[in-house]
Image 1: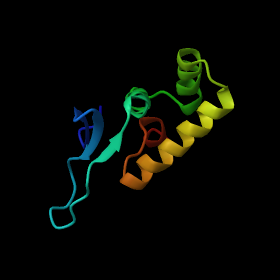
Image 2: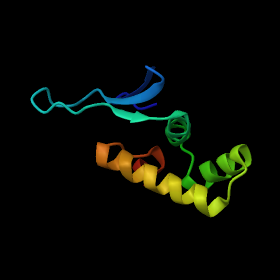
Image 3: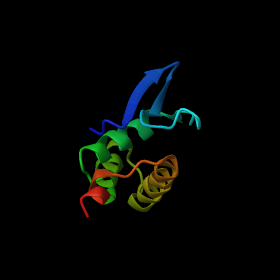
Length: 91
């Protein structure tokens, strides 16, 4: 797992905290629900978006294209927050 980002659960939500932010430029933790936290954890394990979609499609009995679209949107939020998935860092 990334030492820079820490995932914590509090007040019924998960929070992604950037541990290496500049003190003068405080960045609020990124809130996410349980599904977002699961996607984040799978990204941290090096899973690709397609692999994550396969896992979630089975779990939630959803359409693959809908799940993949949600994952890509969530990944964009993570990137805006400063997080880079492990699979992207390896490239």
